Length: 81
Image 1 (cartoon, rainbow, N blue to C red):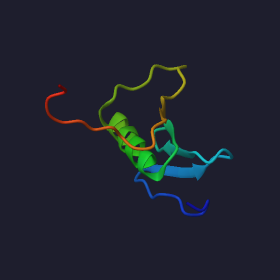
Image 2: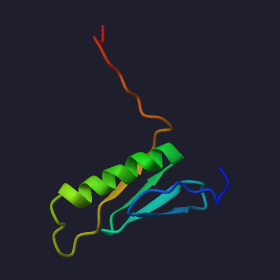
Image 3: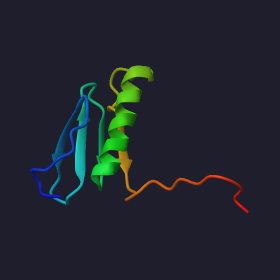
Image 4: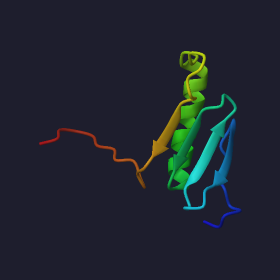
């Protein structure tokens, strides 16, 4: 993905870091990084959910930062045996 082709994620500003990862900053101040556009969309949704339903951060604490290190989510259904 070219550096100017960044995913559009609601309530988030997306930039590309020097190492190629995508960095998201949510309107709430919480941040996240991901290696792929799909991962960025997933952590972007998580940031939106945290902003909507999470408890406010205590004063003096750093804002939450999420790191999505997977290329694709691993989803499993059914009996593991």
